[in-house]
Amino acid sequence: MLKKLSVLAVAIFAMAAVTVGAQQKEEITITTAVSNLAFSAVWVAEQLKYFEQEGVRAKVIVAGGGSQCQSAVVGRSAQYCASSSDGLILAYAEGAPLIAVQTHNRNVTLTVGVRKAIVDKLKLTRKSPLAERMAVVNHLTTIGTTGPGAVSEQIFRFLANKVKSDPSKLKFAALGGNELIPALMNNVIDGFAQSPPSVEITEAAGKGYALIPMGLGEIPEFTDYPFEVLMARPDYAEANRETTSAVSRAISRAGALYHTKPNEFKAALRAHKHSDKSKLEDDVFNLAYSMVAPAMPKWGNMTVDGWNKVINFAAGAGMLKDRAKIPTSTEGLLWTNKFVGKAP
Picture (tube, rainbow, N blue to C red):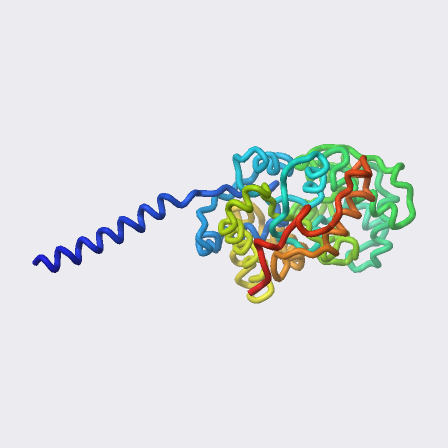
C-alpha cells in the first residue's frame, strides 16, 4: 500500500509540475497588418498549430493596418508584427526600434487590377507581354490607393516610369483599403493594387481584371524581395531568443510546406478563418491562391540583395524624403537571420 501511495504521489507531482510549467509559459501576441493572403504562411502556421509545436503560446490578431501593427510592437502591447518591409524602412527613418527577423514572401504580392471594360478595349490579358500590360497606366483616369504615398500608389508610379510615362500626370484617390473594391465595381476608379483577394474579388464579379499579379515573379525588381516580414523590437528579440526563433521557424515551416506538400498547404489555408468558405467563394479563393502561393519562400531567411531591392524601391519611389536617412542593406540594421536560421 505504501509503495502504491508513493507511486501515486510521484505521478501527481509530475502532473502538477507540467501544469505549473504550462501556466508559467507567457502567451505572446503576433499582429498582422491586415487579413489578406499575403500572410498565408502565418495563417497556415496558425491553422496547423505550428506555433504550439515550436513551444510557443501565440495569439494571432489583425491590427487593421501596417502602422497600427508596428505601433503595437514599439509600444510593447504585442511582441511581433507581420507587415510590409517598405513600412519597416519608413519606421527606421522615424527612429522606431524595429528589426525584421523572418520573411514570409519572396516576391511582392500586390496584384494590379483594372476595370474589365478597359482591358477588354485594349485586348489585354495576363498572357499579354508585360510591357503592354504595364502601359495600361496610360489609360487609367483615376487610380484608387489606400492612402497618400502608400505602396499602392507607388506601384503605379513605378509602372509609369517603366513604360516611360510621366508619373506626375497620374491621378490618385486615397480611399482606404476597404473602399477600393466597391469603388472599382461602381466605376469610381479605373484600377488599384492590393494583395489577393481584393482584385480577384472584382474579377470573379466580372467588373475587374487581375492584369499584373506580382506574386508570380514577372517583375525582376519585385522578385526575390522580402515583402511581408515579421518584425520585433531588437531588445525584445535579443532578450527572448528562443521565443523569437520559435515564431520565425513556425511561419517558415508553413511556407516550406507549400514547396513540399502544396495540397496540404492549400487545404490548411482554405480551412483558416480568414479564407474559409464563409469568407471567400471557391472561384475567388482559387484565383487568389494561384496569384499568391508562388510567392511562398522555401524558408524565411533573407538576403542583402533582397533588402537592396526594398531600399531601392523605397528610395526611388520617394518614400524617404531625407536622402541622408536611406539605410544600408547590411544585416543587423533592418534585418537579421540569426533567429530564423537556415532551412532544416
